Length: 411
Image (cartoon, rainbow, N blue to C red):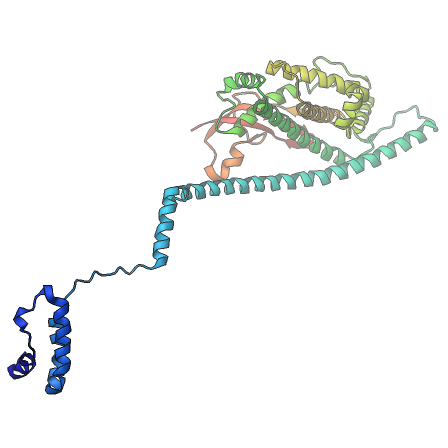
């Protein structure tokens, strides 16, 4: 303070000595100071009023105030919730990331499976439409053939044989025959593949020793059922089943050294086609009721023969489940129908087989793995050899149906 007079005016009216003020008498001094200041207020000027607060701040004790943290209830609640979640440990960042990755993987796998199913459904729909048209054509042709046969029985037969084209005595055109054969080839391939899938499923469902038998069967190809590529396992098993199912396909009776039923080639052709038409719509339920031999003895004999062959290959005598039996019957029936239709042509259609270690020829062969991976792996290898024939091909007169193979690559 610069004005000593004003200071004296203030202090002389006070009976207390400022020098005796101590922290022990803080509350009493504060009260007396406030009372004295109020009584001397008229003697002071405006400057004294302005300095009053500074005197009060000097007289009053400077208590230490603890700073209050600015914490809102929401912050406390968030901290408590965060700590609670951390204690639980179920919503940690690592676990959430892992769940997201797994969910993405499952989504991608589901999308790929749906895409494959849509593609297969589209193919089956197209084949069904084609098959319905083909069956309608066959029914119409059978009706015409029956009518023509009845009319022919009442007319005189010429002693001179009627000349004509090679398929002129069949009730359907050559184009319908070819289209029908290609359709049956597709059905036979799909049915054998389905039989192999169900056979592998039997390993997963029951513990009947089939797993050891299949692993022993696949050992020469250095592959097992637990291989990381399940499609590769399916291709190898499918190749082994096709070898058994198409054995002796070249013979007219579908057995080794079999003799023809009819010595007349034309009559043999007609009977083969008639048997094909009669067995085309034979269902599994009809077989369960009356048996295969009730509908066709040759088909029953063929099914028994091929089942014995498959059992011998697997070396597995466990009773077959009904689903496995049904798939085997469908596959056997398709192969038998394919044989009947092949011998309805003149000359009969020829099967195309390739042996192991033969050089791959894309004109006659189709690599099942390379065609699926060509877009990702770039150009094909410089050289490859046949490891195993998956499905045979056929020479359909002026057309070629390639055989499907597995290859080993070099270079």
